[in-house]
Length: 85
Image (cartoon, rainbow, N blue to C red; front, side):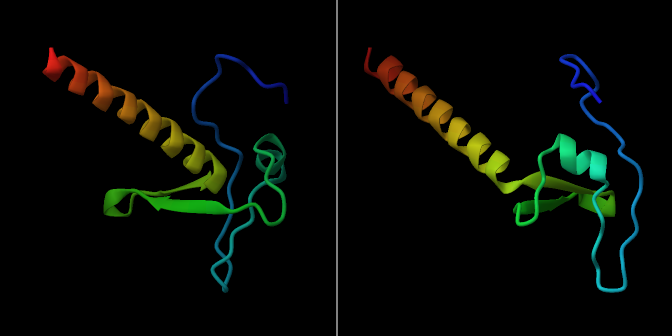
């Protein structure tokens, strides 16, 4: 399926079940579109109140945190400069 620039934020790729060993299968289409290969590290986040789980690539979370830290550092510098004036 072609990637849409302005498509929906969330997408349903199908369903899966938890095995006796606690494993799940990620649908093939999701693995292809998200470039998930054997060995890809995923982080598992849980919603409060047992509402659901979210899987994210560890590298995506790391990249987001690096950008956020950089933006916060820039903001901190701007606030310091404002306080010195």
